[in-house]
Amino acid sequence: MTTKGFFNKFPIILVHGFSGWGREEMGGLKYWGGVNDIEAKLNDLHYRTYTATVGPISSNWERTVELYHYIVGGTVDYGAAHSKKYGIKRFGHTYPGIYSSVSDENKIHLVGHSMGGHTIRQLENFLRDGSKEEQAYYKENPEEGISELFLGGKKWVHSLTCLAPAHNGVSTAEITDFMELIKKLILQFAAFTGLNMNEPIYDFKLEQWGLKREEGEFFLDYIDRIAKSNLWTSENHAINDLTVKKSAAMSKNTKTYKDTYYFSYPCDTTFLNPLTGHRVPLITTNPLFMLSSYEMGRYTNDENVDSSWWANDGCVNVVSARYPFGHPNKEVSDTDIDFKAGIWNYFPPKHGFDHVDIIGVHSKLKIMYDVMPFYKEIMARIRDTEAVL
Image (cartoon, rainbow, N blue to C red; front, side):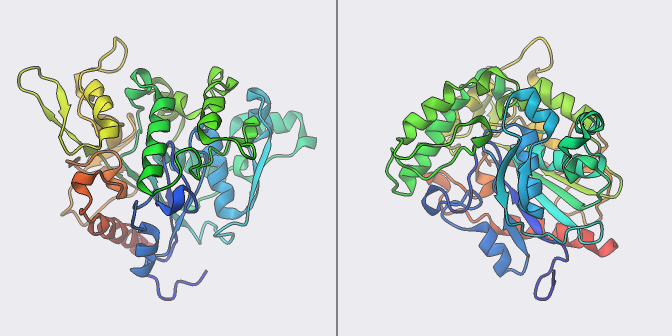
Protein backbone atom coordinates (compact mmCIF):
# COMPACT_ATOMS: atom_id res chain seq x y z
CA MET A 1 0.00 0.00 0.00
CA THR A 2 1.22 3.48 -0.76
CA THR A 3 0.46 6.30 1.67
CA LYS A 4 1.27 9.04 -0.84
CA GLY A 5 -1.38 11.74 -0.76
CA PHE A 6 -3.06 10.46 2.42
CA PHE A 7 -2.80 11.78 5.96
CA ASN A 8 -3.25 8.33 7.49
CA LYS A 9 -0.63 5.60 7.22
CA PHE A 10 -3.15 2.79 7.83
CA PRO A 11 -6.50 2.56 6.01
CA ILE A 12 -9.78 3.32 7.80
CA ILE A 13 -12.60 0.80 7.41
CA LEU A 14 -16.19 1.81 8.21
CA VAL A 15 -18.40 -1.02 9.49
CA HIS A 16 -22.18 -0.62 9.54
CA GLY A 17 -24.50 -1.72 12.30
CA PHE A 18 -27.67 -3.76 12.62
CA SER A 19 -29.86 -3.56 9.49
CA GLY A 20 -27.16 -1.68 7.56
CA TRP A 21 -26.42 -1.90 3.84
CA GLY A 22 -23.64 -1.54 1.29
CA ARG A 23 -22.69 1.30 -1.01
CA GLU A 24 -24.48 -0.18 -4.01
CA GLU A 25 -27.78 -0.79 -2.19
CA MET A 26 -30.79 1.40 -1.35
CA GLY A 27 -30.72 3.28 -4.63
CA GLY A 28 -27.56 5.15 -3.73
CA LEU A 29 -28.65 6.29 -0.25
CA LYS A 30 -25.47 5.85 1.75
CA TYR A 31 -25.51 4.20 5.17
CA TRP A 32 -22.55 6.43 5.93
CA GLY A 33 -23.90 9.87 5.05
CA GLY A 34 -27.41 9.44 3.69
CA VAL A 35 -27.74 11.74 0.68
CA ASN A 36 -24.07 12.56 1.13
CA ASP A 37 -21.15 10.14 1.01
CA ILE A 38 -18.89 10.12 4.05
CA GLU A 39 -16.44 7.64 2.53
CA ALA A 40 -15.98 9.78 -0.59
CA LYS A 41 -15.69 12.99 1.41
CA LEU A 42 -13.07 11.47 3.73
CA ASN A 43 -11.02 10.30 0.74
CA ASP A 44 -11.32 13.79 -0.74
CA LEU A 45 -9.91 15.06 2.57
CA HIS A 46 -6.97 12.65 2.12
CA TYR A 47 -8.04 10.02 4.65
CA ARG A 48 -7.87 6.65 2.94
CA THR A 49 -11.26 5.11 3.77
CA TYR A 50 -13.32 2.06 2.81
CA THR A 51 -16.89 1.00 3.55
CA ALA A 52 -17.40 -2.65 4.50
CA THR A 53 -20.59 -4.61 3.95
CA VAL A 54 -21.59 -7.52 6.21
CA GLY A 55 -24.81 -9.34 7.11
CA PRO A 56 -27.29 -6.76 8.46
CA ILE A 57 -29.09 -9.15 10.83
CA SER A 58 -26.55 -11.97 11.01
CA SER A 59 -24.90 -12.97 14.26
CA ASN A 60 -21.86 -11.07 15.39
CA TRP A 61 -19.70 -14.15 14.68
CA GLU A 62 -20.81 -14.28 11.06
CA ARG A 63 -20.55 -10.51 10.57
CA THR A 64 -17.01 -10.65 11.96
CA VAL A 65 -15.94 -13.47 9.64
CA GLU A 66 -17.38 -11.59 6.66
CA LEU A 67 -15.52 -8.43 7.68
CA TYR A 68 -12.26 -10.36 7.88
CA HIS A 69 -12.70 -11.69 4.33
CA TYR A 70 -13.83 -8.28 3.08
CA ILE A 71 -10.41 -7.02 4.18
CA VAL A 72 -8.09 -9.87 3.17
CA GLY A 73 -10.12 -11.39 0.33
CA GLY A 74 -11.17 -14.97 -0.30
CA THR A 75 -14.22 -17.10 0.35
CA VAL A 76 -15.97 -16.59 3.68
CA ASP A 77 -15.36 -19.51 6.07
CA TYR A 78 -17.72 -19.33 9.05
CA GLY A 79 -15.85 -22.18 10.71
CA ALA A 80 -16.48 -25.92 10.76
CA ALA A 81 -17.55 -26.00 14.41
CA HIS A 82 -19.77 -22.94 14.15
CA SER A 83 -21.51 -24.07 10.97
CA LYS A 84 -22.26 -27.53 12.37
CA LYS A 85 -23.46 -26.09 15.67
CA TYR A 86 -26.09 -23.88 14.00
CA GLY A 87 -26.84 -25.88 10.87
CA ILE A 88 -25.66 -23.28 8.37
CA LYS A 89 -23.50 -23.50 5.25
CA ARG A 90 -19.84 -23.27 6.18
CA PHE A 91 -18.72 -21.24 3.15
CA GLY A 92 -20.21 -18.03 1.79
CA HIS A 93 -19.48 -15.04 -0.42
CA THR A 94 -16.08 -14.57 -2.08
CA TYR A 95 -14.49 -11.12 -1.64
CA PRO A 96 -11.65 -9.64 -3.74
CA GLY A 97 -10.14 -8.03 -0.61
CA ILE A 98 -9.35 -4.37 -0.14
CA TYR A 99 -6.08 -4.67 1.81
CA SER A 100 -4.50 -8.09 1.30
CA SER A 101 -1.15 -6.77 2.55
CA VAL A 102 -2.54 -6.22 6.06
CA SER A 103 -0.06 -7.42 8.68
CA ASP A 104 1.41 -6.62 12.08
CA GLU A 105 3.25 -3.75 10.37
CA ASN A 106 0.56 -2.71 7.86
CA LYS A 107 -2.29 -2.25 10.30
CA ILE A 108 -5.88 -1.03 10.02
CA HIS A 109 -8.20 1.40 11.79
CA LEU A 110 -11.72 0.09 12.34
CA VAL A 111 -14.73 2.40 12.80
CA GLY A 112 -18.03 0.75 13.75
CA HIS A 113 -21.51 2.20 14.17
CA SER A 114 -24.04 0.56 16.48
CA MET A 115 -23.62 -3.24 16.25
CA GLY A 116 -20.57 -2.48 14.13
CA GLY A 117 -18.90 -1.81 17.50
CA HIS A 118 -19.55 -5.43 18.50
CA THR A 119 -18.22 -6.62 15.16
CA ILE A 120 -14.92 -4.74 15.18
CA ARG A 121 -14.26 -5.73 18.80
CA GLN A 122 -14.87 -9.39 17.93
CA LEU A 123 -12.64 -9.13 14.87
CA GLU A 124 -9.74 -7.85 16.93
CA ASN A 125 -10.28 -10.64 19.45
CA PHE A 126 -10.26 -13.33 16.73
CA LEU A 127 -7.19 -11.80 15.10
CA ARG A 128 -5.32 -11.73 18.39
CA ASP A 129 -6.47 -14.90 20.15
CA GLY A 130 -8.35 -16.92 17.53
CA SER A 131 -11.25 -19.20 18.46
CA LYS A 132 -10.74 -21.97 21.03
CA GLU A 133 -13.91 -23.63 19.75
CA GLU A 134 -12.65 -23.82 16.16
CA GLN A 135 -9.15 -24.81 17.24
CA ALA A 136 -10.49 -27.68 19.37
CA TYR A 137 -12.66 -28.92 16.50
CA TYR A 138 -9.73 -28.74 14.07
CA LYS A 139 -7.53 -30.74 16.44
CA GLU A 140 -10.10 -33.55 16.34
CA ASN A 141 -10.87 -33.13 12.61
CA PRO A 142 -7.72 -31.84 10.89
CA GLU A 143 -8.90 -33.02 7.48
CA GLU A 144 -11.62 -30.33 7.51
CA GLY A 145 -9.15 -27.44 7.78
CA ILE A 146 -9.38 -24.19 9.70
CA SER A 147 -9.50 -20.53 8.71
CA GLU A 148 -6.42 -18.42 9.45
CA LEU A 149 -8.73 -16.05 11.32
CA PHE A 150 -9.38 -18.62 14.04
CA LEU A 151 -5.69 -19.29 14.68
CA GLY A 152 -5.01 -15.84 16.15
CA GLY A 153 -1.55 -14.33 16.57
CA LYS A 154 -2.28 -11.27 14.43
CA LYS A 155 -1.72 -7.72 15.71
CA TRP A 156 -3.40 -6.05 12.76
CA VAL A 157 -5.65 -3.51 14.49
CA HIS A 158 -4.18 -0.14 15.43
CA SER A 159 -7.39 1.53 16.64
CA LEU A 160 -11.07 0.86 17.23
CA THR A 161 -13.59 3.72 17.08
CA CYS A 162 -17.19 3.03 18.05
CA LEU A 163 -20.07 5.40 17.20
CA ALA A 164 -23.27 4.93 19.23
CA PRO A 165 -22.14 1.38 20.00
CA ALA A 166 -24.11 -1.21 21.96
CA HIS A 167 -21.14 -2.45 24.00
CA ASN A 168 -23.31 -3.75 26.83
CA GLY A 169 -26.43 -4.57 24.85
CA VAL A 170 -29.63 -2.62 24.39
CA SER A 171 -32.84 -2.70 26.38
CA THR A 172 -34.71 -2.43 23.07
CA ALA A 173 -33.73 -6.04 22.38
CA GLU A 174 -36.26 -6.99 25.07
CA ILE A 175 -39.07 -4.57 24.24
CA THR A 176 -38.98 -3.91 20.48
CA ASP A 177 -40.29 -5.88 17.50
CA PHE A 178 -37.06 -5.69 15.55
CA MET A 179 -38.35 -7.21 12.32
CA GLU A 180 -41.09 -4.60 12.19
CA LEU A 181 -38.53 -1.87 12.89
CA ILE A 182 -36.30 -3.16 10.09
CA LYS A 183 -39.21 -3.19 7.66
CA LYS A 184 -40.17 0.39 8.52
CA LEU A 185 -36.57 1.56 8.36
CA ILE A 186 -35.88 0.06 4.95
CA LEU A 187 -39.16 1.15 3.42
CA GLN A 188 -38.80 4.70 4.74
CA PHE A 189 -35.31 4.97 3.28
CA ALA A 190 -36.55 3.43 0.01
CA ALA A 191 -39.28 6.06 -0.20
CA PHE A 192 -36.72 8.74 0.64
CA THR A 193 -34.70 7.79 -2.44
CA GLY A 194 -37.76 7.36 -4.68
CA LEU A 195 -37.43 3.58 -4.99
CA ASN A 196 -40.42 1.32 -5.55
CA MET A 197 -41.65 0.31 -2.08
CA ASN A 198 -42.03 -3.30 -3.19
CA GLU A 199 -38.63 -3.52 -4.85
CA PRO A 200 -36.02 -1.61 -2.85
CA ILE A 201 -32.46 -2.75 -3.48
CA TYR A 202 -31.61 -4.35 -0.15
CA ASP A 203 -30.03 -7.70 0.62
CA PHE A 204 -30.23 -9.44 4.02
CA LYS A 205 -27.16 -11.55 3.04
CA LEU A 206 -28.43 -14.73 4.67
CA GLU A 207 -27.27 -17.25 2.06
CA GLN A 208 -25.71 -19.32 4.86
CA TRP A 209 -29.29 -19.95 6.02
CA GLY A 210 -30.58 -20.66 2.52
CA LEU A 211 -32.49 -17.37 2.51
CA LYS A 212 -31.35 -15.84 -0.74
CA ARG A 213 -33.94 -13.58 -2.35
CA GLU A 214 -35.67 -15.39 -5.21
CA GLU A 215 -35.88 -13.93 -8.69
CA GLY A 216 -39.05 -11.86 -9.02
CA GLU A 217 -39.85 -12.11 -5.31
CA PHE A 218 -41.48 -8.98 -3.87
CA PHE A 219 -39.42 -7.37 -1.15
CA LEU A 220 -42.18 -7.54 1.47
CA ASP A 221 -42.57 -11.27 0.77
CA TYR A 222 -38.81 -11.62 1.18
CA ILE A 223 -38.97 -9.93 4.60
CA ASP A 224 -41.90 -12.08 5.71
CA ARG A 225 -40.08 -15.25 4.66
CA ILE A 226 -37.08 -14.22 6.75
CA ALA A 227 -39.31 -13.35 9.72
CA LYS A 228 -40.77 -16.88 9.61
CA SER A 229 -37.40 -18.60 9.24
CA ASN A 230 -35.99 -21.02 11.81
CA LEU A 231 -33.11 -18.55 12.06
CA TRP A 232 -34.98 -16.93 14.95
CA THR A 233 -35.40 -20.17 16.93
CA SER A 234 -31.61 -20.41 17.14
CA GLU A 235 -29.36 -18.09 19.12
CA ASN A 236 -27.30 -17.32 16.04
CA HIS A 237 -28.62 -13.91 14.99
CA ALA A 238 -28.06 -10.23 15.66
CA ILE A 239 -31.01 -9.60 17.97
CA ASN A 240 -29.83 -12.25 20.41
CA ASP A 241 -26.30 -10.86 20.32
CA LEU A 242 -27.61 -7.37 21.16
CA THR A 243 -29.33 -8.45 24.40
CA VAL A 244 -27.82 -7.23 27.63
CA LYS A 245 -27.07 -10.80 28.74
CA LYS A 246 -25.31 -11.86 25.54
CA SER A 247 -23.36 -8.59 25.31
CA ALA A 248 -22.16 -9.06 28.88
CA ALA A 249 -20.86 -12.50 27.93
CA MET A 250 -19.03 -10.98 24.95
CA SER A 251 -17.36 -8.36 27.15
CA LYS A 252 -16.27 -11.10 29.53
CA ASN A 253 -14.79 -13.16 26.72
CA THR A 254 -12.99 -10.38 24.82
CA LYS A 255 -10.06 -8.23 25.80
CA THR A 256 -8.89 -4.65 25.64
CA TYR A 257 -5.32 -4.88 24.34
CA LYS A 258 -2.60 -2.66 25.73
CA ASP A 259 -1.26 -1.51 22.34
CA THR A 260 -4.58 -0.70 20.63
CA TYR A 261 -6.32 2.69 20.81
CA TYR A 262 -10.03 2.67 21.68
CA PHE A 263 -12.55 5.49 21.24
CA SER A 264 -16.28 5.51 21.96
CA TYR A 265 -18.88 8.19 21.12
CA PRO A 266 -22.34 7.84 22.74
CA CYS A 267 -25.42 9.78 21.60
CA ASP A 268 -28.43 11.01 23.58
CA THR A 269 -31.71 12.17 22.06
CA THR A 270 -33.62 12.44 25.35
CA PHE A 271 -34.26 14.83 28.22
CA LEU A 272 -35.47 14.30 31.78
CA ASN A 273 -39.20 14.72 32.34
CA PRO A 274 -39.31 16.41 35.79
CA LEU A 275 -42.87 15.21 36.42
CA THR A 276 -42.21 11.50 35.94
CA GLY A 277 -38.45 11.21 36.32
CA HIS A 278 -38.33 9.31 33.02
CA ARG A 279 -36.36 10.20 29.91
CA VAL A 280 -38.38 11.27 26.88
CA PRO A 281 -37.25 11.92 23.29
CA LEU A 282 -36.56 15.35 21.90
CA ILE A 283 -38.93 16.55 19.18
CA THR A 284 -36.05 16.37 16.67
CA THR A 285 -35.67 12.61 17.19
CA ASN A 286 -36.15 10.59 14.02
CA PRO A 287 -39.80 9.44 13.95
CA LEU A 288 -38.62 5.85 13.51
CA PHE A 289 -37.10 5.96 16.99
CA MET A 290 -39.70 7.98 18.90
CA LEU A 291 -41.57 4.99 20.34
CA SER A 292 -38.47 2.98 21.19
CA SER A 293 -36.92 6.03 22.85
CA TYR A 294 -40.02 6.49 25.03
CA GLU A 295 -39.94 2.82 26.00
CA MET A 296 -36.21 2.80 26.73
CA GLY A 297 -36.62 5.96 28.80
CA ARG A 298 -38.66 4.10 31.43
CA TYR A 299 -37.85 0.40 31.02
CA THR A 300 -36.32 -1.61 33.87
CA ASN A 301 -36.10 -5.28 34.74
CA ASP A 302 -35.13 -7.28 37.81
CA GLU A 303 -31.79 -8.42 36.44
CA ASN A 304 -29.57 -5.79 34.91
CA VAL A 305 -31.48 -2.73 33.62
CA ASP A 306 -32.25 0.10 36.04
CA SER A 307 -32.85 3.85 35.71
CA SER A 308 -29.20 4.45 34.75
CA TRP A 309 -30.13 2.91 31.38
CA TRP A 310 -32.90 5.41 30.56
CA ALA A 311 -30.91 8.01 28.62
CA ASN A 312 -30.75 6.77 25.03
CA ASP A 313 -30.41 7.65 21.35
CA GLY A 314 -33.58 5.85 20.29
CA CYS A 315 -31.85 2.50 19.82
CA VAL A 316 -28.88 2.32 22.20
CA ASN A 317 -28.73 3.22 25.88
CA VAL A 318 -26.08 5.83 26.70
CA VAL A 319 -24.67 3.72 29.54
CA SER A 320 -24.12 0.89 27.06
CA ALA A 321 -22.38 3.09 24.51
CA ARG A 322 -19.60 4.39 26.75
CA TYR A 323 -17.34 1.35 27.17
CA PRO A 324 -17.63 -2.42 27.67
CA PHE A 325 -18.37 -3.09 31.34
CA GLY A 326 -15.35 -4.49 33.16
CA HIS A 327 -12.81 -3.07 30.71
CA PRO A 328 -10.37 -0.22 31.51
CA ASN A 329 -11.87 3.13 30.65
CA LYS A 330 -11.56 6.89 30.99
CA GLU A 331 -13.93 9.74 30.21
CA VAL A 332 -12.28 12.25 27.88
CA SER A 333 -13.32 15.47 26.16
CA ASP A 334 -13.10 17.09 22.75
CA THR A 335 -10.28 19.30 24.01
CA ASP A 336 -8.02 16.42 25.07
CA ILE A 337 -4.98 15.82 22.90
CA ASP A 338 -3.27 12.94 24.73
CA PHE A 339 -5.07 9.61 24.45
CA LYS A 340 -3.73 6.39 25.91
CA ALA A 341 -3.68 2.98 24.30
CA GLY A 342 -5.10 -0.02 26.14
CA ILE A 343 -8.04 1.88 27.57
CA TRP A 344 -11.51 2.88 26.33
CA ASN A 345 -11.48 6.66 25.81
CA TYR A 346 -15.16 7.58 25.89
CA PHE A 347 -16.58 11.02 25.15
CA PRO A 348 -19.58 12.76 26.71
CA PRO A 349 -22.84 11.92 24.90
CA LYS A 350 -23.55 13.98 21.80
CA HIS A 351 -26.76 15.52 23.09
CA GLY A 352 -29.50 15.96 20.51
CA PHE A 353 -28.12 13.19 18.30
CA ASP A 354 -30.32 10.16 17.71
CA HIS A 355 -28.94 6.82 16.59
CA VAL A 356 -28.57 7.67 12.90
CA ASP A 357 -27.69 11.36 13.20
CA ILE A 358 -24.13 10.31 13.95
CA ILE A 359 -23.85 8.61 10.55
CA GLY A 360 -25.37 11.58 8.72
CA VAL A 361 -28.84 10.08 8.15
CA HIS A 362 -31.11 12.82 9.47
CA SER A 363 -34.79 13.45 9.86
CA LYS A 364 -36.25 16.42 7.94
CA LEU A 365 -35.83 18.59 11.03
CA LYS A 366 -32.05 18.15 10.77
CA ILE A 367 -31.58 17.75 7.05
CA MET A 368 -29.24 20.73 6.84
CA TYR A 369 -26.90 19.49 9.58
CA ASP A 370 -23.37 18.83 8.35
CA VAL A 371 -21.78 15.84 10.09
CA MET A 372 -18.42 16.17 8.34
CA PRO A 373 -16.72 18.46 10.91
CA PHE A 374 -17.34 15.70 13.46
CA TYR A 375 -15.79 13.08 11.16
CA LYS A 376 -12.79 15.30 10.51
CA GLU A 377 -12.22 15.42 14.28
CA ILE A 378 -12.47 11.64 14.51
CA MET A 379 -10.07 11.08 11.65
CA ALA A 380 -7.55 13.53 13.06
CA ARG A 381 -7.55 11.63 16.37
CA ILE A 382 -7.13 8.33 14.56
CA ARG A 383 -4.29 9.73 12.46
CA ASP A 384 -2.54 11.16 15.52
CA THR A 385 -2.35 7.72 17.15
CA GLU A 386 -0.04 6.64 14.32
CA ALA A 387 2.57 9.18 15.41
CA VAL A 388 3.66 7.05 18.38
CA LEU A 389 4.79 4.14 16.19
